[in-house]
Image 1 (cartoon, rainbow, N blue to C red):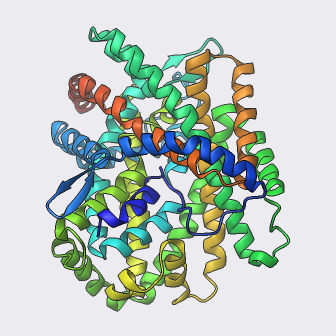
Image 2 (cartoon, rainbow, N blue to C red):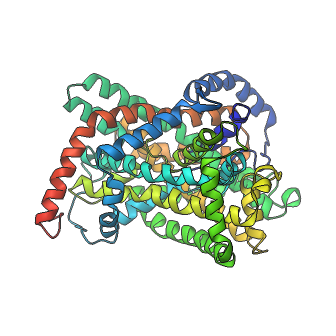
Image 3 (cartoon, rainbow, N blue to C red):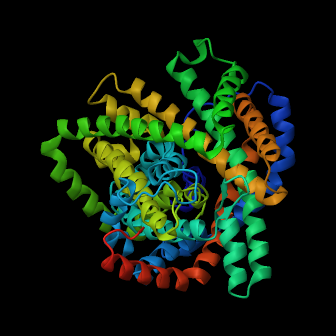
Length: 512
């Protein structure tokens, strides 16, 4: 069964992500051009995707190796750093609250702004639709393993974002540039592996530049447009066949924000992310409260399904894979993208931002994805979830509507905000990859911003599935060089952490 669901795995393989392309019909105003481009790119896209998402048989389940690579890394760092995801959680909250803020430190944005910017890149339509797809394939038990994967993924985020700040570059104008490109290049050079680090850094930068134009851009604008069409009347909507116009409006809004750089993006996400997350959480909690008496049974169903999963190919292993996969593809722990945003933070102590970053998978996966899963389990029984003919955002929308009849409209608004915030974050990620390759400079940043905005219009206007498949694969191939670097640099993170805790035990404020 899992082998037959390979295409569904790829649907889940969208960072943050945001939506599945089958949820709504795509609009193709230039079908002939689409077909020509798809025909030309499809062989390359298929080859790259087959390599990146290659699966091996474990028992009766097919296991994508890229998922193993991400999860093994998360488990390794969790044990290697002594469960810092749990030990450091309260300290992370204190840092985000501004308890250790130092405005005179180098950097451009606060800890809170760095967190909301990075969260905007991971929290997306996938938190609404991707969980439903996972539950429809693996049953309620997949939610349990999703939570476990989210918890261990917190440590990977801690490591990569600490390194992002530690090896960031402060530019002549006071702006910052950081992320995997820099700690791969400079961190590995420090350990006598300069040639390898230079190659891995450049490879990562090229991958994120191309990948962001597909998954973080065209995919988002296409799905945002289709959501607008669906909400406003479908084929009878005034927006039908006007993807270029909606794309242009979105491009102008995004362009007006990203032209100001990370400070402008952070100001918007600092307001947008809490609002859209809170709006969704309130809706989910209302549904849960309305079914409070059924909550213990819902948890029992999830636990039982996690360790039995009789209706899932591969049994317990199969449902575990689905849960781990949804978490890994949702919070991007191990991909390294979030380290680019966190590198801009105002701090002279890199570990403080590592603590902040470990909150991302908790928010994205442990909280939002879990609440989505609970809404589904409370609304439908297991046979309906796995064979009721609904999937993706359609299933989640039906679950909310079963309790609150008018909920699909605000749910659509949340989905649009999720897609919009994702474009903002990935515009910044792509810009930093671009300037790493071609060199820093305001004009070069503006040039990439223009390119990014053009692709927003293209994404809303046409269907280029092969290009999106190719970009999708490039996003996840970044996990390979990133985790190689994290393993090599892990000893210095553990030593830094040891010194940090020792200093904090002496000083009331570790940033002083």
